Length: 253
Ligand SMILES: Nc1ncnc2c1ncn2[C@@H]1O[C@H](COP(=O)(O)OP(=O)(O)OP(=O)(O)O)[C@@H](O)[C@H]1O
Image (cartoon, rainbow, N blue to C red; front, side, top):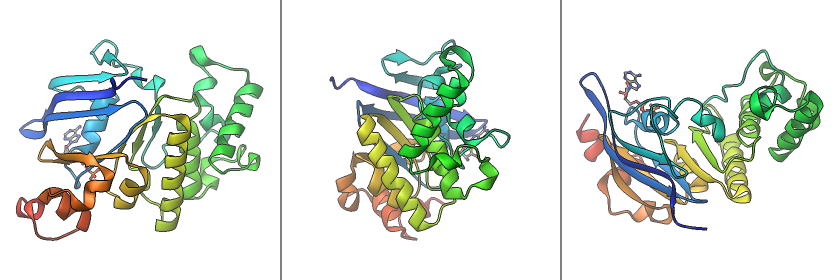
């Protein structure tokens, strides 16, 4: 084990026209660590994540993942190596639950025989609390919480060493959100995975994070261990964590 960051962003900048969304983001996530990026709506959390997973190309700065610098050439398909739980689950409606979970094993270089792929999917479904009886259902037949579990099973299907979570509790009631947060934490710890999550749900932050970074006005305003978020001494974090109407964030609106 080394302290080499699994994920490192250095001076990452991205504008859309005259809108400077990211103005030099520096972040690093070490091996086995869970970093949660917080920030208000429209502060660039999704843009940051999309830069990291290669869906958006930054205007400036560097991103290194697992020791490899992201370049225009290797960006495509980079995500294949990592697990990702998309906001809303992003399941394929026309495929059964097990086919969704085993998606990457049904084609390409990791292809398995269908029976083996199904067995793998059933095992992952079990890990997220779903019985084998859900394997042949279709996403439309599942509740939102079950869809999230299936998305999580798909994210961990290939035992990735790095997992990204995009707003993992969006659309869930508070009780189901808590269940999913617990499950994410358990699985990340059990797999020893490095995790990066974006969210504005403070209950997720408290459950999932080892470390927290607060994004505002295109830069990381504060970062520190999750144990410090109630006592950060940072006015942005204080306002955000406590949901206060007054403070530097509201003053800028
Ligand atoms: N492809 C794009 N083209 C133009 N503007 C974009 C694009 N993607 C994002 N933006 C803008 O960048 C800003 C940051 O968006 P982003 O989705 O990263 O915010 P966020 O922090 O994830 O917000 P939320 O919590 O509401 O999802 C927004 O103003 C958005 O309109």
